[in-house]
Image 1: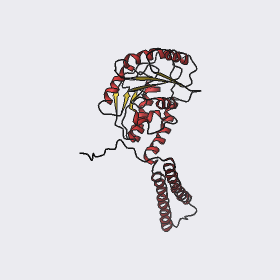
Image 2: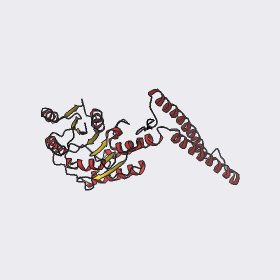
Image 3: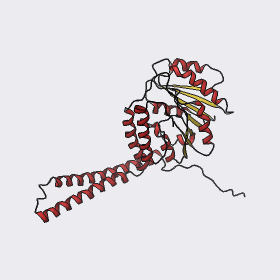
Image 4: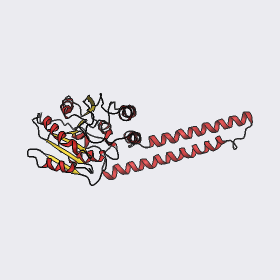
Length: 318
């Protein structure tokens, strides 16, 4: 199988037929085998009925994954990836705001040697105040913190080489950070400008609350990418910083006592210094415990702290 196209669905019955026809038209241009995976994320409309109709069509390789309830887009994408058998995995939304006609652009970029190609909705057709502006702020924040420079993390339309999707698991609301995980696994990441259409049918499933989710998820991703293998660098760094501040605080109190004969023990700075010293010590202990947990994880699960692209051996017969 060459291509696997994954579409997460939640109450998109009105858009599914047009989406299927558009994807089919585009993929028939390629002389390669492809499959289409629909993940029904607990839809309560007629989406499942429409999907059942697709399963009866001859000449197509279609998979429908039905969730018992709504688990969210990340879970839907993860289920689609687990079921995919294609060398190239393409993600696309079901609301017709992503244009299937842009799929060849992503694949052409992959052929240039990239491993992940992300769509960039440069001319986004959404409400500027409640959708576009928060998205731009979130994208800039993610790019700054992770170092992976993309303009549009939230665009679902992306293409991946399958090998880089098998190196990590997806949890919570982490689907937008797949390019970050992939680059951490050694993937070459880039982006291309894609079309974006206004939604004409159905209702958007996103609100301003996703900004809070992005910030919290970003903290998790930063920790996993930078400190998961060496948590002591985070906890120990914070602990040492607090202890240094504590020592500086005590020095300040001592100097003030020498110069002005001001009582050390009656000052609130004395309590603050003690608290920073204790918190710093506790943080270092937490770092040590985290180090033990990480070592136990890798050793008991047979995990590796590295990823190998290929092993090349010399030919002794030459």
